[in-house]
Image 1 (cartoon, rainbow, N blue to C red):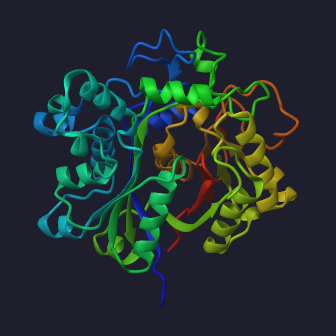
Image 2 (image 1 turned 90 degrees about the vertical axis):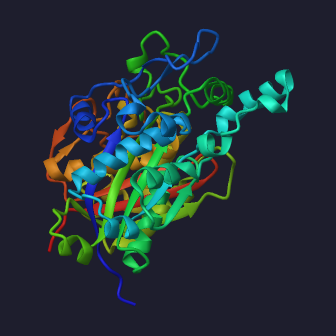
Image 3 (image 1 turned 45 degrees about the horizontal axis):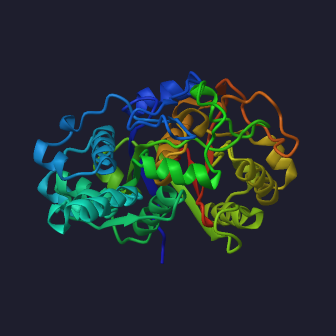
Length: 413
């Protein structure tokens, strides 16, 4: 079977740095932190009181009151990013286009909201529970709400593979298009889990940064020797993916090519990352793309800022690329500015990957102050770098061992 080329024709993003892709990109290139004190709830009793929140978002801008009331914040953010992606791709939905277009979206959904409903049952009885739990909080509504709001009748699937989710969703969309199962899809991830339960449990696990509550902009510090955990973020990143024939048939401007995808599983520990598992995802992505590590212009790292992830990812890059190529390639983590948006991270980082090729600019890893001997690659410290960017490899590694890596390339006819 002849596999088809997959084109990226549209992008949309909602992030702590801005509520559209261009504002997000400007914030990255400026090295600006989007992290601040938690405002979504009273965090005064929590050991962690900082997060990367989306600011100034009004769901009324993207859906009517009834739909907004039935939608979790994660689904609302997804609709905004999806609508921007369609505008970016210059798609005006017709009956025919809506019939063929599908949505593959990653999200945790409202899993951390369910405890409140149990409390209502315990205190007030089962007759007072929220009757809209499923449409409001079900993770399937990441794709479902986008499809419903836009009237799309193609494939609709939601994915959750922890922090690898959005890159996983993009990879499934990529495979569907190149195999001929779909011609055009919206794909990416969305997340909104900055709530008391999520923050409390991740803090107790030791995953979140606790040392910078008074200086939140310094809290996310991937690869720095003083890193002490990740900062929880939220947002959405969505791409329009099309077959080459479909994109050219409608005269679309192609932003980049989706060249390859790799997956792996650590099979070692429920939380601790594994060098072999992470390296296998990169090796398989490079093989899928038909390139080597020496061909990569920028490595968009998972780079969470936890002590174990960053040294593990550094070692995995060396294993996958070989030391010579690993020391040559620029590696940076935009989570230093956005925080870690869990299931949405890979979608947001995919948007950054496309824009890096467009502008030949590599965003920095901010808060990089103290080198770690176990993290000794070129992390593009603190300031964006002008460089020719033809190929981007982007990593997403999930807590639990799920690993996904994608590769984008500048489009060449």
